[in-house]
Length: 279
Picture 1 (cartoon, rainbow, N blue to C red):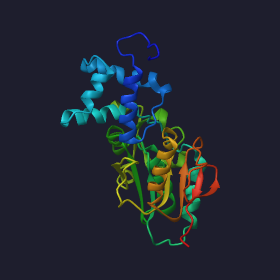
Picture 2: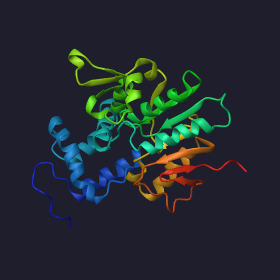
Picture 3: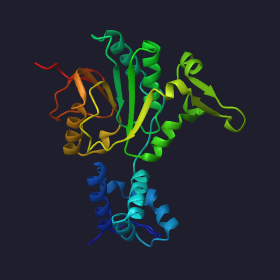
């Protein structure tokens, strides 16, 4: 027998939760546990109201049906259920480490390549780009930002953010790489065009990566595998590491543990790992 459900037209039964658990696990690897039932109801309930759909089961049937309309709504549902939390220069020690990696690289003639593998609205990718341009100028370097959500990637490509989200950008970088909005853009900050043009963004699903991304010198994979179960973490890590060059570095979130996951990495510092050189 099911546990009693909360009052309200959009409460989620255990059977409905199981449908979405299976769907989002297959689609993006998300481990939607029983404790996330309230989150599911909160994030998708308003959408059911907007579409005048009576239940979560009906909504599941709608987004898993064939056709362009259902496919678009499935993408929207995925967007609603995922967490997109980021910021400029979040965990400053990681960007200091990036600067040291650039300075100590063996082949200064090769492009230094960075991948922000769960870039959300782009602040992480632009933070890395500021460090790279500061160190290398017009020498060859690239930054790729990727996310499963096309909505956040549209924000990332635009490169415009509320000033309140930019307080951790170093003052010198603010002056060099950012423009303060005027008139109707008052209270906004725009990453300057030259830097935006050197950062690319792609929609990528970490559980189904293409073969042709890398190799990268450094990969940010922060605050994303925490949402996966252990087998999915291992799958994603192995796939991501396939695009990291030997001797390159992987940066994870401080709340994310790789303990017990069999991947070829050497711990360097807190949430910083190195892929060993080929034997």
